Each structure stands twice: as structure tokens, then as C-alpha cells.
Length: 106
Image 1 (cartoon, helix red, strand yellow):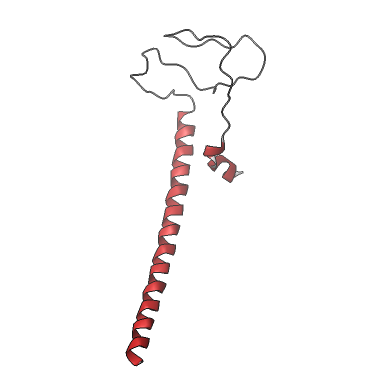
Image 2 (cartoon, rainbow, N blue to C red):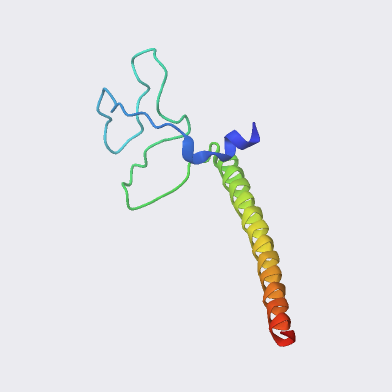
């Protein structure tokens, strides 16, 4: 259940363009058909155009919590990989030292 939420790269995006053109410069109207909506519920187009980016107040804290959770997971994975790499480097260093000692004795 938690892992499914973390697999954000596996989300399927709809390949079908919208049937009706959206009005520019305002909020979009609800689709006139009764089928499932492919648009996120919290998405409202910004009237000021692409130059400004602002998150809608609805669900933004939930989205931020999800992003923070994903970043924490990535941070934990990187810390684990860093520890494993340090252990491998330590083992490799010990093996090199053992080989040097063997060369001295032979």
C-alpha cells in the first residue's frame, strides 16, 4: 500500500486529448459528459498565464506531505547505499593490506 504511493513514476497518464476546448483566462467548466474525469480535482488554470506558478490551496498540504515523504524515502535509500559503499571500501582496503603483507613475507 505504501510502496504503491511511492511509485510515482508508474502513474498512467491519459493519452486522449480533451474533447472540448477550454476557455482561456478563466476557470474551466465541468465536462458535460457523465464519464470519469481525467483531470485532477484540485487543478484550476491560472488566469495570469504560464509566467506565474502557484499551487491551489486545496490539497496542497497533502501534496507537499507526499513529496516530503518521497524525498525522505530517497534520502534513506541514499544513506543506506552510502553505508554499503563504505563497508565495501573498508573490505577492499583490508584485502589490499592483506595482499601487501603476503608480498612482504614471500
